[in-house]
Length: 129
Image 1 (cartoon, rainbow, N blue to C red):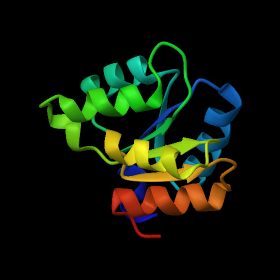
Image 2 (cartoon, rainbow, N blue to C red):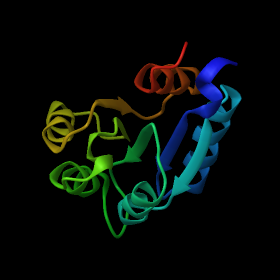
Image 3 (cartoon, one colour):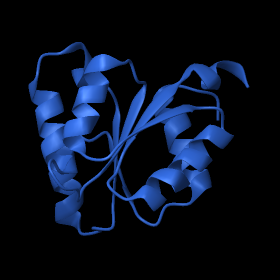
Image 4 (spheres, rainbow, N blue to C red):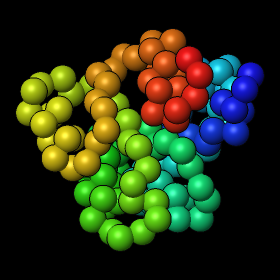
């Protein structure tokens, strides 16, 4: 499975069902997946371990996805440049624009097929698709 098995993805979402769904899709492709329940926990994990991609939900308690992105991009830390894929049920143009302003690399509207999620993860991790 080439270098995909070494690519690490952090899934940040407060919904256990979503995290499980994303984990199944990504691990089936050979990615190593870690989880965080909100943006604050996600930032902590990014500072402790290296990841190749973060997938973050917009609406979460404690620290939402937009605040996570703004905080991540505003800090001059080695992890500030990690690619971030935002996922949300919000589908308006202003939601996409807000995510881009906050520093998202891409925005996917839920529901997302497992195949699509794995394809985007491979693309942002530089892994063979």
